[in-house]
Image 1 (cartoon, rainbow, N blue to C red):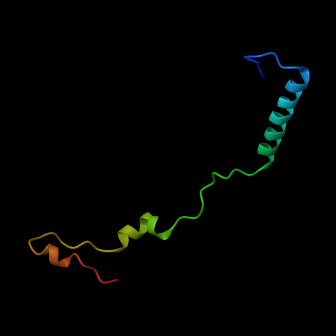
Image 2 (tube, one colour):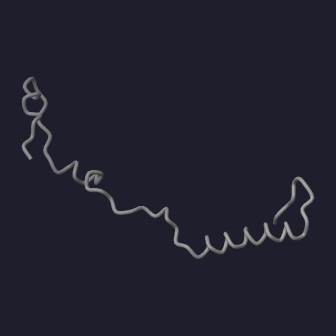
Length: 69
């Protein structure tokens, strides 16, 4: 439903505005949504976080924080 809030449009102006609204609605109904998520990057994959063992805590743990890749 379209409601004119201000002004006094002519029938031609109202028909033109309605044609634009209907055309945009038709295009939106026939296009695929672009909000679909794409493929995940490997850095954001949560399964990669559990693939390495963490160093055991202790007084010399700082020396074991470097892992060779």
